[in-house]
Image (cartoon, rainbow, N blue to C red):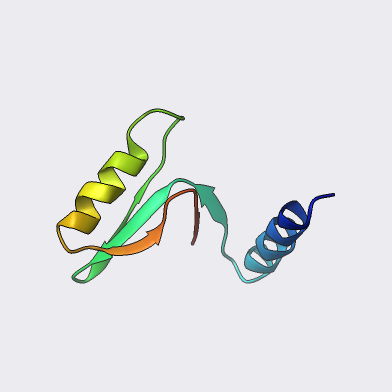
Length: 67
């Protein structure tokens, strides 16, 4: 098993034990909250994240986001 895959599984299990989860999507933070974008490949998630970052938002993730 590739190291990244093993690490991803370990992190996922750790989050589940604490009531969290990973989602496939992107996320940004600004002001008092965060926005998580989920969707199929090619739906514009990365483009949205890049526009938000250009507007001053903070980066949470582009491929996987921990909740």
